[in-house]
Image (cartoon, rainbow, N blue to C red):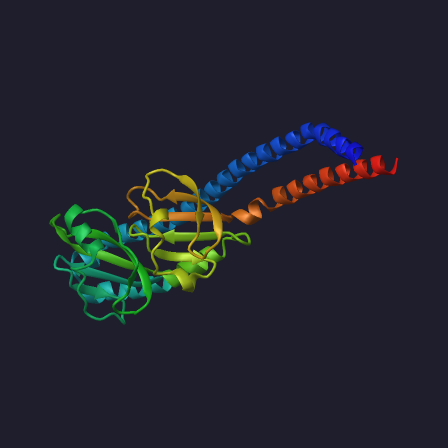
Length: 292
């Protein structure tokens, strides 16, 4: 028995370097893989943010063209209504197009729009205050009852004085369908949130999360891209990349999270296999020694 104990101690001592090397390799591999996962999550977040930036820029360009429309400048209601109704057919992603005066009363809209007032909407207040392009936040359209986010730009009359604002509302249902087609890998999550941290769209499970607030510990507003390991809103641990849109895009933020368990699954399997090999080697040596 004493001899067997000595043999066991000798084998254990002999295996210590192998155990140390295996532990270091796994630690180094995990650290390297974590860095790669962060880079991947951030890269995918930036790519998705670039896609969203194009949507914002598209809205800006359409509004800029509308603000120069003679029928709007002259407040020709009939011609303006006809033009907006035709425009809606070309841009089905947008629920509505309206033109309001300085008091927020719309005087021009697509054919099925009713008279409304936008004076209490943050994007309208911002347009009147700054005279610049403004992006709204998550809201329910007063006419459509659908989930939307608005974009607005002032227009000026022929006398160069501000006459009001042109406003368009993007359907968040359309936005959810759009990001669902981007090819998000299994276990990952892509989301777009407004400046208040409210989900505008999310894949997967959009209907569960749109309109809800992002957890406070994740809604840190930074002017630069970053990554973090978080417990996501659906209870999954993820490595998340955060990519804000440009400064004049209303504080929109894109997040892309990779499932941490999936990202480190292969490393975990290799670690377990290495430990098993060491245990088997120890057992074989002891069995051989005992037999002899």
